[in-house]
Image (cartoon, rainbow, N blue to C red; front, side, top):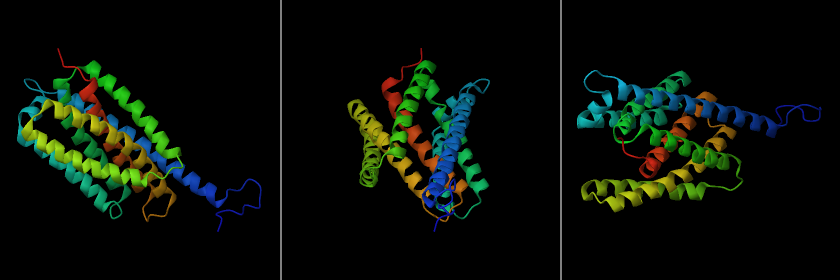
Length: 240
């Protein structure tokens, strides 16, 4: 049934109503993701500059318990938000998402200890361009990316195993290969996740639009951050 009687000029059809809903949800996705990136950037800069004798970033980098504690907190927040999305209020899910962005920003502050500001900013711009292009492709393409996405997620699990292996092997050549594969994986996942969020927005998933937007923003945020970190291996230059 049409939401409006399409026999009357100027009224929306059922399909048009769906398109309007998808557009509204995707706008919320990108706004929330952009705000989360701002939160992370602010937290990273504060983490690097704050502190009298030693910055927060240096403390995180030199204390493995703090570093892994923050990492586990991030993982816990992602799991909690994803698992409880339909059972918590949109305001709570949004708040937890920004808390995750804050914690992740503090963790990311350690990159300022290793790379120059110019190279970090340059890599951010490159990441933004690549991410934007692939997200636009994922949104507008008529090609079903499900099979590609499933393959990329399997490749991601393989990548994680390779990273763990290389922690003990510590082979620099293998590390560069891992970084290159990581870039390709998250380029592809950006397109697929965008299409997946769009498809979910077009269907009745039993979620409030705001909650779905939070989940979509979290998913694309993770794609962006991981793509940025892998690209930083290629475009980042050491601090003087």
